[in-house]
Length: 419
Image: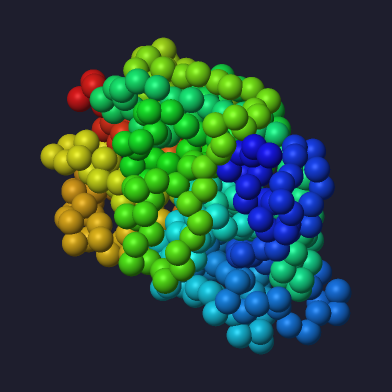
């Protein structure tokens, strides 16, 4: 029976020969993860179930990344609950400050995910690992608590939307622009509880960091997961990070899709999602020259090495506008170190940027760059809902690192081509 790549992963983890969209299946989980916000409730549920051990101490990952280093007493208490649990149950993949970065950046980086895995996390952007040919999805903390105890969960098999990207990318157009354009076309509910399967000739040369960005934002179209078929570029990325082989699956040629979306990437210029929704998307040339109080480059969406390189390439020899704060936060200690070695930090500092510790930073309006009333920010993050990055009367625009860096220099929303 023909299946999509997502259906193949789910059927294998359910111990079934095949599955079909809409079917409820119980699956074995390869990796369960939580962060400093979601772990404490999951731990409470774990104890309420009467569990005396986690299902596998090497298949649970706990990452303090949202409010770290601890910003106040409540966040310190949250982190302490997670730390005590990690030590009590000898969790192998617990990452303290200094080792920790953004969960969705460091887990692939450290080889904890391989193609064919089934990953469930108490964070909506767990769908990031679809860039590695894995099924990954977010759940609530209650579900995660049960998973930590049993190693299993129930899932409904999602129907798939096949998104076919053809053509040649324009200069300055990146994976962030492709996914923003796609979300703009589908809408924030357009892929609700469906798979977004990213395919097409334009995908082949797309950098892994771009693929992580696209899979990460699948949930912004309502998708249960986003996924790429693993290829040689992924093999090169995985090599040396883990001893696990992974399973390199692809969809059958006659696999069934609920919808097929064709996109010519040559027609896509850099995109901007305007307030207050990720699907309120316009080409940067059509966006008003909005004055900016803050530009943020980072997050699980765009805090990777290639993002910093692109940003530094634009900022080199230039200065952020006087009235615009420029905040840059690398996604992991490894990226932080690599950026130092490459001289990227020197370029950023000379441009007037402040560089934060590897963490989620201001993405969720919690720490290291909260917006005040009336302020406007351009951010490389994934959401721009009302109050997302601070005051309910602030505004957030979403864009790529290239647009963010150029806009920091211009002091308003603008294109790298203007420089």
